[in-house]
Image 1 (cartoon, one colour):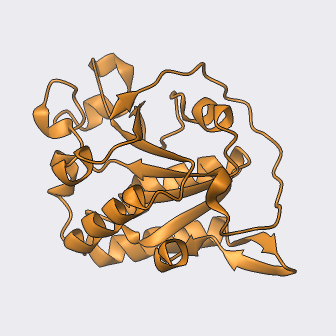
Image 2 (tube, one colour; image 1 turned 180 degrees about the vertical axis):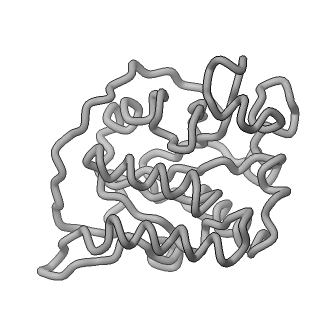
Length: 209
């Protein structure tokens, strides 16, 4: 993984909905919290999750692939650092990306400090620097960090999609489905293409085939 630093830009951009839904030339894949310590807490579709995320990272269709996972250097850096004292600390080897993804090339690592990948991070600036229009989310947890990141991405003006079979939750199937329900409730059918609308939750086959 490559660490890249960008100047923060917290201001939202205007939401536009151009044509070409599956044209990924202006798209970014954001991989959320796929670390050794956090994947251990996943029981629901763990093997499928790892396989789907790895396939998406390696498909070569996205303009940008971002690895965003918790990375605390000291407790004062985030309220989550004290809430979860055993997760995301930089000096813990298990806070690293899982081996199945560590071997993938071309991923940009951006430190994550809160539930949302956007909060207090340089993610928005990184996406705009690469002229990203569409953001696709995968990883964990559907009902926490994926949900929070999806809402922030939507607020900041990116066309935002959650890849249903490439996310999961430590709260099992129920937590996963509850997270998807909240995402659909608050974001719903957002993207117009050819006079029709598409749901914000999609399947990896829509991107890999």
